Length: 227
Image (tube, one colour):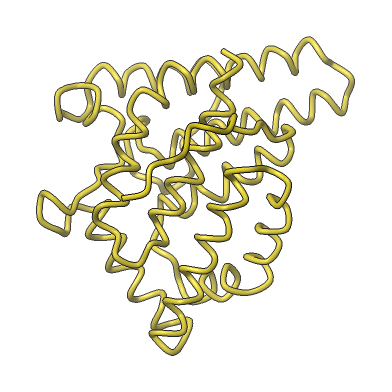
């Protein structure tokens, strides 16, 4: 298991970049990859992610680890389709309950905060956060509000809103959007996400999702530091 190091301060990305990365990570942790996704991440898109994060300590390391792990899976499986199938199996074991109890990394905040139960107070707070900020669940996503992908996508939408407000010169509104992200991250993401990351690391033999979880944790640490 590789713990996220604590010797360096977690970086904070500009709002537009933060929105893109959070949305990208939300996708990785919400749906199994298909062959097209593998081809993109193992190719030019992966190169772009590593380049974009090269100047951000911690984020750069985990971006490289994620892309290299993905490329290794593709090389071992011999094709994008084979890699997608292998990663879908890991996804099912980790996040869909297809593995043994020790191999599951439940993607719901409530499991870690409400005594192992889902649809509790943590889910209610997440739903209230979405409603307060006029954020809807993605169409076709049949998950409770405290699913990690839903929460990351919501933070991505707020970061995108913040970027638009900055571009329009509405700095007060941008500050409000930034404060919403920081407070929610500090109070509702960071208290449980390290446990989630540890479970992913312990049960991901390929290392792709482990790197994604560490990259996400670094993002959240930077975002929550301003609360």
